[in-house]
Length: 129
View 1 (cartoon, rainbow, N blue to C red):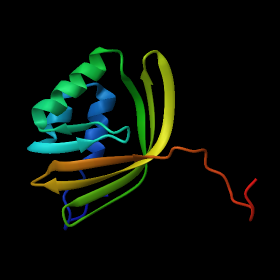
View 2: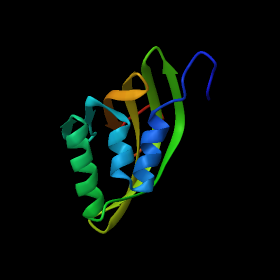
View 3: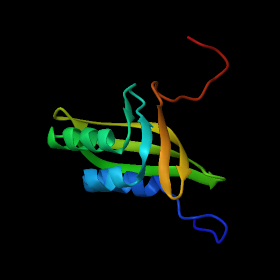
């Protein structure tokens, strides 16, 4: 995925840091004033708040089992990925599909927003039941 004209993507490193359970690595990938908007609605403003969130989530039993990238691209300070997220929270293992769009500045995440597929995917047959 690396190109001589594009730096290595940051989003896969962010996802790997969550899989590794490393709040410090997660926070270090953001600019000092970086913003993360989760698909569930919470907004985390600044590297210190992201660190607090990651520590709290992971210390309360949160586990990211996998975060598989389906597709991704980077261009002119922006990155996007489609993914499947597999995790455990409150003793319940779940997974869902989603996407992330991020603004990158100097190799760090300045803003990141996640989107989640909320319904089961199906092939449309021409009518709705």
